[in-house]
Amino acid sequence: MKKFFSILAASALVAGMATSCQKPNTLTAAEEAEGWQLLFDGETLNGWRSFNEKELKGGWTVVDGCIQASGEGGDASGYIVTDKKYSNFELVWDWKLTKGGNSGMLYHVVEHPRFKVPYVTGPEYQLIDVEGWEEVNAPAKLEDWQKIGVDYAMHLPDYSKMKINPVGEWNSSKIVYDNGHVEHWLNGEKIVEFEAYTDDWFKRKASGKWGNATEYGLASEGVICLQDHGDPASFRNIKIKELPKTTAGKKISLFNGKDLTGWELFGSMRTSVDAEGNLVTENGEDLKYGYLGTREYYKDFDLTVEFKQFSNGNAGLFFHSFVHGGYKNNHVNGWQCEVAPKGNDTGGIYESYGRGWLVQIPDEKENILKEGEWNTLRLRVEGDHVQTWLNGQPMVDINDKLIGSKTGRIMLQIHDGSNIKVLWKNFNLTTL
Image 1 (cartoon, one colour):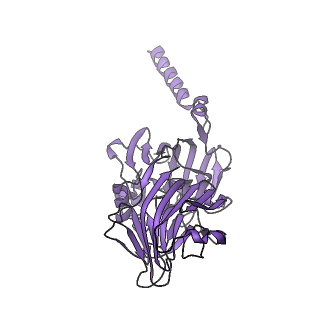
Image 2: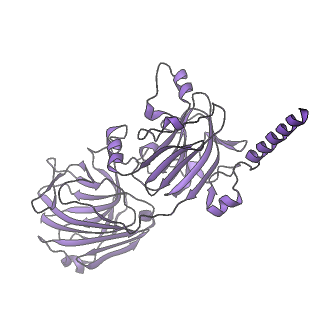
Image 3: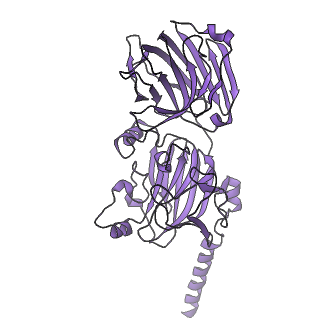
């Protein structure tokens, strides 16, 4: 009998060694061969900084091989992000909360002074001690879309597969983002699965917490973010494997010739579709700027579109653009391929971030624009490289690192003023 128990004890010891022999915050040879990378070295916070900052500020430390959130943060502060942006990936990490603890892992977070917090752009894998939180905050109760493992305020998990270790013990999670296919895993079980940017996804976005968060979830690349939501939390074994982009070469017609499916209206603009299937944009009643933007982001693309100007025809084709302040506002940030009356640089590139004109067209090319007739505008954006053509003639060819570092909507502008009307058709885009 003693020998039998000795064998059991030895077996248990071997099993324990098998599960703990790998030092935390390291990669095996097999993981390295598969392309996994560490986001935390176990000793320093190198590669991390505070959201919208160039350096790491207070509240986060390394203790016993773990990243620890002090619990000093809150809804408006306490976020750290990776230096690097990521697009398609598998991301795994271990986490441990205190009683009632609340934290989260966000991805595709966009940094810009206009975005005061990460969650208005980046989706979140929610981390929370549900029972402890409700006990501490009684009689308040969490909504289902606020609980552990959810795609926050968007998709609920399969609760039958939820296996959560007690508070104070380690759990393991994984996020997969593979060219729009998303999965959440918890302790070895897949608990959430959905496709981003479908009609269902946009319906969820419009009907819930993100109804007026114009840019939520649209970026398909961005930094990864850890949240200190006012409770201590610990993280370790944060690893990522980047996955290949598979959407290059996709051909998309942005306008169906019937209605505004796939577009969203901002600020002041009147829109319609005429009997010939042309998209009509013109001044709104208040005569201020108005914008019609794609509901999706496009980073690298080759786009051709035809336009016809009426009256002074002062408009524009924006790209890598976003809106802040809600749908009723017209606060647009990004770059504009100019569409304007003759003599006003149609095909040139203007920046609304603050630098103004990046490049204007030569005076001798102003006559390429055909007033009162259909014109074909081509815009190609690939990384830092931006090119434009008007009626087959090259207009602009520039390289700009800031443009290459961003992504965003394609948007049609109507300038402020009066009696401005522009027709558009044949929006043909190829992803690069």
